[in-house]
Image (tube, rainbow, N blue to C red; front, side):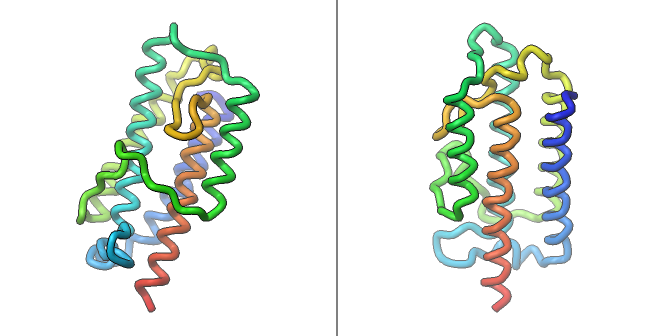
Amino acid sequence: MNPQLEAQYLKLEETRNQLLDDLEGLDDEFLNTPPAAGKWAVNQIIAHLIQVEQLTNSYIQRKVQKQETLGDASIAHTFRSLLLKLALHSGMKFKAPDAVAAVPDRSSLSALRSQWDNSRYHLEDTLTELPRELLDKCLFRHPYAGPLSITQTMSFLQDHFHHHARQISQIRHQLIK
């Protein structure tokens, strides 16, 4: 695996495991309780994070197989990637795209962890097998930011994770009161 991708992947893994370990001792009832009507519970947010990673990885795999349609990452892509990062770090709320908005009403943390482990193994395989000549190609199309290179995509996954980790922390504090 490319050293930069490996560093990004390991950071993503570290933060995921830290979050799941922090939630491990909490009761599934607590983790499936929304903080308010129409809001997602902690386990629903985790299910959403898993969906995003799975769909992102599937998209990348399809693009790698159809290399003839890949464009080069440009300054414009870098700028849009930066805007996406700023938006996710701003604390603003966003409506999830339909493809990743259907989350189960209830689930167990252990089942979600297992599903996420499996998803991460597939992502690791994709990153390991990625040909060097594709590192500067646009391999993923974010629904709002547009085409991103693989390193920009990994940054998006980390920023997206942090965006939702903050929400999970807020929910925990709301429900404990």
